[in-house]
Image 1 (cartoon, rainbow, N blue to C red):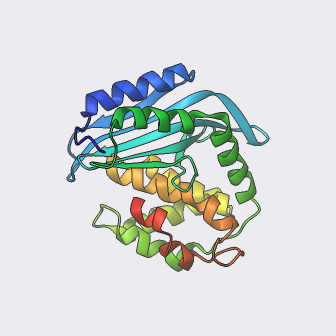
Image 2 (image 1 turned 120 degrees about the vertical axis):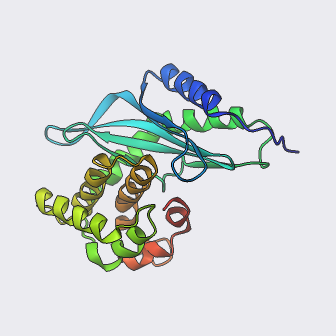
Length: 234
């Protein structure tokens, strides 16, 4: 049995703020309103206890939410203090997608999903993936372009160019460096929808660089195109 009632952006943001506050964190930023799509709300929150992924390089865990009139997505979120980049971990097992008409009590499910994303285990898993990404290599150009061409921006070539500029600044061709180049592009993007999708693409890099469930080996970026979790986000 389901309930077709759907929470407003204000109700979602209140519930999001409440659960994050109970976990000891705070809402870092939020956007509510039209973006050229039906987006109702985008918000990110961070938790207080950081973890080091390298000397003097700390991450804060958190949670991110994106809501439209038909769908809610709640994901673990990671914030890198040294460069203020954020990554949405759309491949995390704690990720929850709630579609209109599929839940009896939407706000209850949203609150539960937020608590799961705020759990220490979610942050620990994300931090470990990011540490491992420093030791993994990916082919940047092979399939970044198909993803960027599906972003809500007419200038996919410009997005790729900016990612490559940021990658050159990182001087790091590992999966970690690629993730940072993408999330740095997101940080400097004003469009909230485009920023979300870039952060989700960046946050997917560590997971996809480590293992392929179909092959048991490190995937090429061509495998990313076939990943339904990421395809649904970007």
